[in-house]
Amino acid sequence: MNDTVRFWRKVREVWDLHRLRLLRELQLRGTITAVAETLSYAPSSVSQQLARLEREVGVPLLEQDGRRVRLTPAGTRVARYAAQVIELQEGVQSELAPERPVPETIRLATLETAARALVPYALTTLEKQAAHLRIEASVVPPEFGLSELPTRGFDLAMAEQYPGYTRAHHDQLHRELLGTDTMRLVVPGRSGIQSLSDARNVPWVVEPKGTAAKDWVVQQCRAAGFEPDIRYYSADLSVHIHLIRAGHAVSLLPDLIWTARPRGVRRISLPGPFYRELFTSVRRAAVNRPAIVTVRAALRGALEAVQRTPPGGAG
Image (cartoon, rainbow, N blue to C red; front, side, top):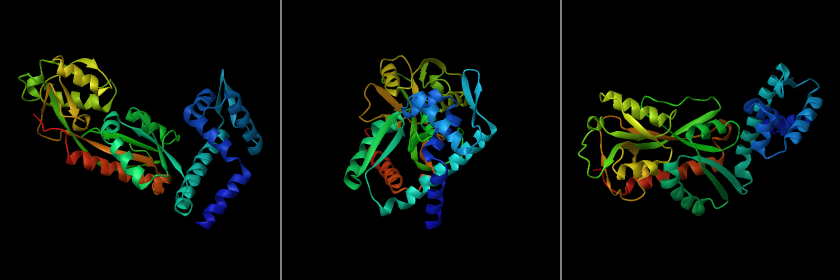
């Protein structure tokens, strides 16, 4: 490890790490404006820092492309090098963390259902076991959370995938299964629906177009022999529940959405692989970072605790 630390320090002496990070951000985000917005800098400041990096490197890294700039071939090579340096830095920091325990912030991207059911349990555990950790949690679509991990917008992201709909794997990211969450058909309380095939002639509410959840629901209905009559779209699952309770729709919903005993609806268990997998994802360089290990363990414990004491049985 000493050789690694010395190498990293030598890199910092040659080219400024902060400016390398800005170049890498530009490669990932495409525009100086996007980099500035992400890092809370003025665009002029980002441009000045990149110009200084060009002078340090000694070759042009950027070129005009209309009203924007783009990386030159040399800029692309340096940006790839920057990614390796940044990953090395994070790996060294993870190795050194046990030797220098200090307050840390973990930025967590979480699903809506996990934010309701798991995050409060996990925070309670962390307050007792790791009071030095500050958790900043954002409820965002899993696609966004995962895409922001390589750019360091988040440190840890929670996401879901469905049988037959595995999310793409990224070499930079490490994925760890959190557990499974049963999906059930949810119908109005007074509905006579008893099975998925019974729901062929009623309106459906699903998550927005382009989401894995929406695509999976459509596939399950097709496997049952019909095309769902989708009339309502919402990423907010509480909207689904209100529409179902009012008698206007049905849906396939995860058990974790129920933080209290369901009222005005019936939940119908279905045969087959009707579940989703929940997983956490982090950058590979941070896999062994003690704070990451601790937060992942707290989330696993939260899921186990919630599933031991469900709010109510299925209808």
